[in-house]
Length: 223
Image 1: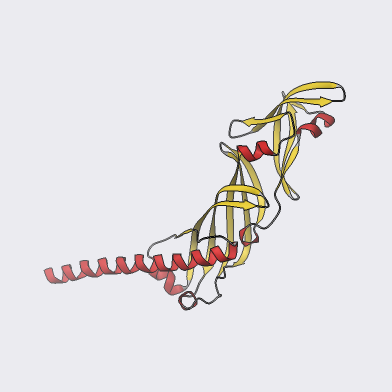
Image 2: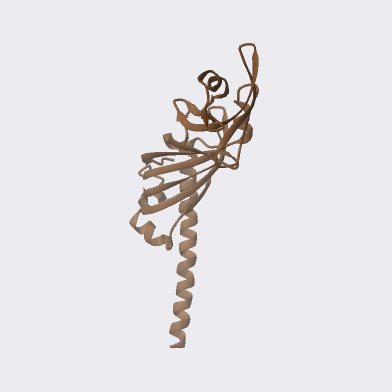
């Protein structure tokens, strides 16, 4: 009986070790594929969620694969903390081992941050962007005709065609006059190709700046 218990313990340890070695190998392969698909200079950090891994590998189906792309330059605009997840990944083990291209994710989501420095870089002259992490504000002084006008406005953030728009919305709860709003409002250009051709679906204010989210469906992950 004692020998059987020892044998079972050793077997469990070996299975866990094999599981971890196998997951590391597939994560490395997926990292290389993601790097090629996203045109990265090096493979990202990849994590296959769920334990045990071997049952996922045997079925060729991974419910969730997370990856960290770090800093990414998107059409000249630096994006920090670019990270994402691929859901319902179909990756037959034979295709992974033989480096075949038959790997696809049902859905890919990506998020990243535009820093305060980037937000300030594109602001009009005389406009200073601030906020509390939940809402952006704009303050400063602009010229309207021959007059200098000081302001402190709340900003609305929205996804616009070709960029992220910061629109002056209210001053002390009152809608901003149209002419003044035009002088304060601006768009951060966001053109080019994000990894996996994801499309920006939303943006929100966070302590570090602006965090956007993007997603795509039926995404091939080719090496």
